[in-house]
Amino acid sequence: MSGSNKKRILFLDMMRALAVLMMVEGHTVDALLSDTFRDLNSSSYNVWLFIRGLTAPIFMFTSGVVFTYLLRLNPQPFFQNPRVRKGLIRFITLVVIAYFLRYPTFTVFDFNFVTHDQWMGFFTVDALHLIGFGLLFILILSYISERLKIKDWIVYLGGVIFFFGLFSFTEKLPWTEFLPIPFAAYFYHGTGSLFPFFPWAGYVLCGAILGCYLAHNPGAFTSKNFGLGLFYIGVGSLSVAVILNLMEYFYFEGDVFLINNLALILIRLGLVLVLNGTMSLIALKLKDIPEIFKQAGRHTLLIYAVHVVIIYGSAWLPGFDMILHKRLNVLESAIAAVVMISLMLAM
Image 1: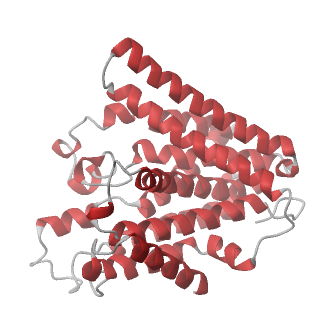
Image 2: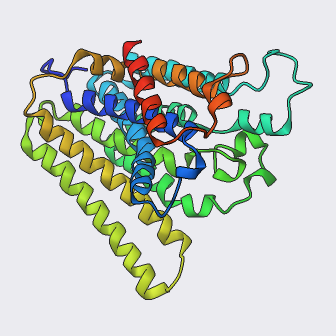
């Protein structure tokens, strides 16, 4: 990835590599670690669980940054920008692969023996679906920005507010009552979807705002103030989340669905921004990172697809999860994660 000064944005390479390696580790341990060791009273398990919960926001945020940075670097009108076509192809590729990985039958066209649970698994919206549509939303909002002559970051921010702000309401709606399950799965967690549009697309669009800033301000990432700015904005997001939690405790005296959701969203976003700011500051001290980590960041789709098939299997191949599902202890799960990460880097 290069800016107008042909200098790579090193901290984005670092973030992409971190995101994909966290994803591989999280999936491996979650699939194989025995329930005996999943103790919510254990501080070490809670730390692991908390870090794992950050993997998806980091992955989605970074995807939005990189895609938008490359899109907005090109000053051509929307329909003449080659990145638009590439983005549409990327959207289609991600969604097709996402459904292929969850295909319910090895017979391809014979669905007579597919169970209800298998169909529900096939319609589950996962990270690839969400990122694919997240890129499509960026393209749509970029077009709206150009047509209405509104600054692109303002339009992206509107999208962020939309997906974050409506989550507490969309999650309560019975989407399956007025939409077929394959479509309802994109709007809430009720069908078993892991990453529906609300609130998860908001993290992709948050990344789009940063990508837009980097494209419009070449070389900004080489300044210490840039990293500190991201860090402080992240701390601000965390502070607002704490205030919301205090409001709930002192004024509402109970579990408030709206406040809880907004606080959790802001905590995740704040930590992602703090991490990006920290990586940016670290990158200023580095001349480069090992090529193998750059390659891992560039080939996230390949790594995602291959490691998912190895761990969870597919309609045509059994995965390790089918054989060792939640049967390993902590050390064995850690070794399995190291082996899986090593295989992905070697690939």
